[in-house]
Length: 229
Image (tube, rainbow, N blue to C red):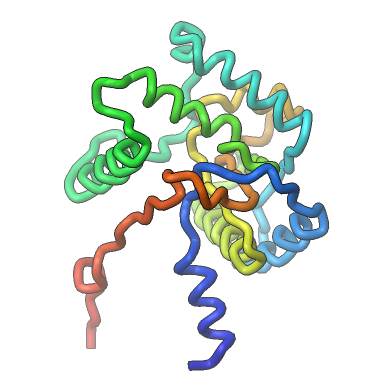
């Protein structure tokens, strides 16, 4: 097999959602190159719908603290809801089983039982520290854009994760940020015309953290592919 094919395949298949990062800084030049390369994602009529806010240092800490202050207050947290439905409003098979499995696989690794609601809450809250990654990314889109641009956006996000893997970096895409879009808009100065898509942690995986051993399963081809000849 061609070595370039193997390298691309390795970058794709080694991508995982990492939930514990080392404090090792990521060079700005690497961040810029990853984002630059990722703009080669296709987009209908070359709209290029992506807008990216790169957070490091004090700026990242301020956003984390602002969100956690609300996340840890049940009354305040209930006042924050997502602007768009990332997950289905009604769960059906096989999606609900897959969701439950990855959740409990993670909690089992961390020793969090079903009864340990505080432990679950704390683990979920780690999203808002970008799992201690040195770089946090917040993605936004113009509100005037429609579903096709959101599909394009997904390809851009995937490019970022693959370009990061090619450089020995890891990521975790995070829909968990979407309920707190008002806090994000205030902290980052987002204009009214922009909508938060998601967040993403970027950095070097901590090899000693057990949560990073989680490897999710993928269904076999014959469960979702039909060849029509």
